Image (cartoon, rainbow, N blue to C red; front, top):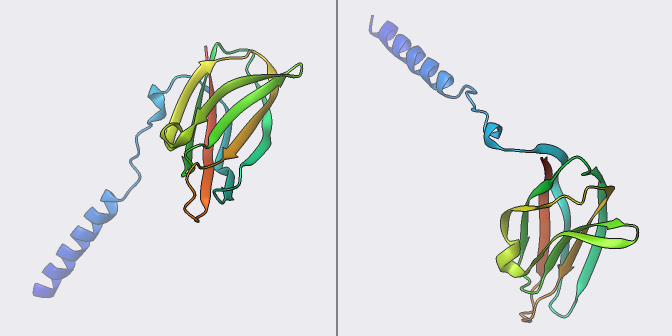
Length: 155
């Protein structure tokens, strides 16, 4: 009888634990406005250098159509320890650079960033430019990284 009680109690608590771990997720996207028009997960680009180096790299991300949207919301996670570093997202329209945004220094770059801007109302390639530079030379390597880029079109 005692063994049966132990087995019953063990099965009961096992059932509660398994039920507690089931997927009961809530849709958190319902409050977000806009249509996801571009997404790239994981590491998008990064640079590593020493303090005496001024490193710049420009990458073509993809073609994006913003003609049907009044504004854009760009979300990503970024990090740098170079106080003079810069991240710029831009497009070219008839050979002229149109900045969507430009962030400078550790105060603007570090953390998860949500940036809103007016739509260029064009269909062009998106370009990402990372600049790594630090004003103080510690003898260590400096970094700049950008991850998980999403662009939403908003009417």
